[in-house]
Image (tube, rainbow, N blue to C red; front, side):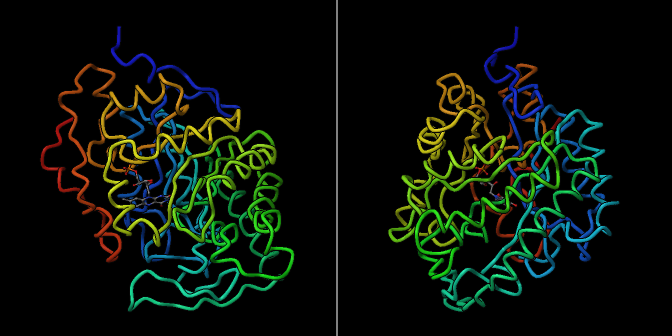
Length: 366
Ligand SMILES: Cc1cc2nc3c(=O)[nH]c(=O)nc-3n(C[C@H](O)[C@H](O)[C@H](O)COP(=O)(O)O)c2cc1C
């Protein structure tokens, strides 16, 4: 008998059945080729984790529009030219026994050509203050379509579905947040108007991929800023996304403008720091909800699922640090798991356009 039985209980999600509750959270690795195509290194990364038993792998943020690219060497899905490479990636994940979704991304005010609902200055760092261009109604319509087209490409490439990047302060969140959306038209002002853009993106994607394919949503339950999107609004949006046909919510609170505030950094340094907020969202919906954020031991992951706080866990850095994390649980070798050191070396590398590496890899043995 395996020790972590709850973690290895199958989960129904859309039309799929996940073999266990451990999923890979999307993680931009900076392994892509400079032209936006998938590299062999990208394929190896995902295939290794799928082979070790991860049930669902969300492939990192992938651009739906050439103007929406954030960091260089990001994977792209904004033209049919990228389908060939994406197909190799999807096949490698599926051949290794995992399900694959592609995360669809537009950076909005954090893009290389910054556009946003409103020209509100970004606050990443004094030298990085940018005033984005206000997006026009025509551009909004075009982008809604581009999300749909990119989703269709992911399906052409053989992915099981897509995950919309509706968190971390990127374009979809810039519309829902009252601090970045100051529009006076039908996309701004009231809660109903602010959630209009993400809901139209969901509808467009659903139309392009059909009813059968998995449609996940990377969901920001709370912006963690005083003038931002609040948990009360998050609860309402979760229900609306479910009604719109989203199959799961992967909860990730905060944005780049809140994560580095000292009081938030205190919170995010704690294991399982998003479990309670995820549970609040889970109470609102029937679709599966994933917990994210420093779920760094199998015991914590098991406890979250056993206590019904979430339906699955989405791990980024723990599976980056130890590719065989799941296999070691399955084989009762949890003492051999190499733990994420929470030093953010991976993130610091990618921010500089360098390949993600882990300070703990020297300890990894399969
Ligand atoms: C290097 C790095 C890249 C990331 N890239 C993405 C991404 O592409 N899309 C996304 O939704 N989240 C991204 N995240 C956030 C993670 O998915 C995850 O929510 C966060 O790291 C906290 O979970 P963890 O403690 O399991 O790593 C990234 C995080 C890191 C460290």
